[in-house]
Image (cartoon, rainbow, N blue to C red; front, side, top):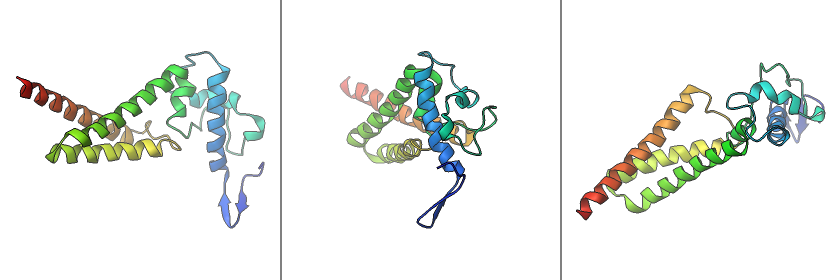
Length: 167
């Protein structure tokens, strides 16, 4: 698929989609091709060109660091911070899911409904994050971290209520 546009069964795919799959390959090559901690957060855009294989390049590929990025929120920490960054991000995802499921079991009333709404918003984000990278945009980052803060506040309130009941 070296052409910029392909037509498959009446569906047209352009280089932007191919660039997404190529950047994922570059991210994995970057993670395995450098040191353990890599270059740090926010550096992948400037580094990925050298890890993109020649047969994966398209007309929108660049080595100048002016375009591009990882089209996966899960691969970004791996490519930028190595295995420690990927494990940290995955631990946040696991924490959110465990807290969300716990709240559905133990809470009741309005706290349960608020927790469910916030949790479903986070599930939507983490599902879309498999194929997209939105956290670098403030319009997404603010609600994401706010939703996590709401889950944390509900958990703290629940724990304090449990302590008060035991007294």
